[in-house]
Length: 485
Image (cartoon, rainbow, N blue to C red):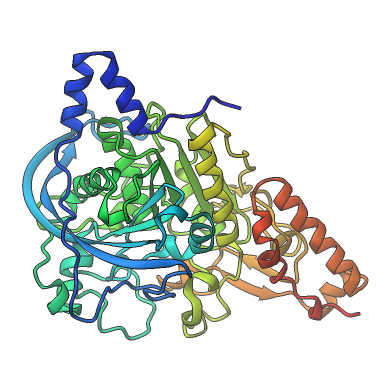
């Protein structure tokens, strides 16, 4: 076991006791906090695009606050944005911002763990969405963590292009909070995605102080979290900002691409579509102390996101978990919308959220007492052709990666490969039932299937890739009725 990690707040106190120069440095770091003093009210109440809406778990409450201040934009320094992630960014222009944060916190402050998860809200659908919260909500609630969603990007506030459309009519997509609810959000203003990184820093600095926004809780750990485009933003943030600002204790990065969110000028939104075709494939830099837990679905690795191009070895500050049989967006994340999206066959029904919850608990332990998360095999790749793909078994199930009963005791072929080439379907993988004849070849009886499924579930739990708390949820994926008695 590694020695326990001091939180950034604790390390700051140690630094203060050492010398006056440390005092000066810490004084600089304490500047430029967002003002979170005003709670939002009126209009239709808090808005967030979420499968669960704005509902909170039992024992939790929902609040929303203005976040205001003056942020600076970043540009690449003389060394550029190298693939080793060792970036030196330069600060450019300054601009005022007036955005918002959404807070889900325990009603009773005594029930709070002290862990605050700060999610960079995702704007790929043209609205602020909270995919990381929906992935982790059960673990957040049972541990008493506080979740804060940050409207960090221009599109969420001001509106702009819709990168990924489900094809389901939504008049709110691309118009921004100010149009969605003018009474509540009409005074918001965002200067552009070039300022988003400093906005995120300033909000985190304010959260570090605790107070009314967190229900009186003073955080013991601040964890930056983001999925998809937001994960790419966090990759940029880690390589260019975290090393100098040192605001976050750890990073939970979910489904990044092989590329990162770009640095843009005033009034501009970052173009992920352009980043796909860029040459840069940066890894997480190795000289920053804050640990990174990076989880990737199978589909993230070899489809449009091509995260295989930014693979890196595990280290004292980095873990990569690739999950076989999963896709960027799946039935759990999409909820009822999964049945409304026509991709030619059902979208992926893999258990990404179950592995993600284990990853979050592992990251918290890593930060709290130095217990490093388990290492995981990578998904095996076939690079013999013109395009990188997963190596597969005779049934078409990916080899390697984190294994669950759904891929090791299958009745379906769960894959990151989409059934359609539309933009949205390319992210959703597929679920293809095995034939009755093949199922009969695999399992001599329903009892054998159930025995093998349970053994595989126990293996995943013992390996640390699924929590014992989620044993029942993993078992619920079993389909014994598909197997002859």
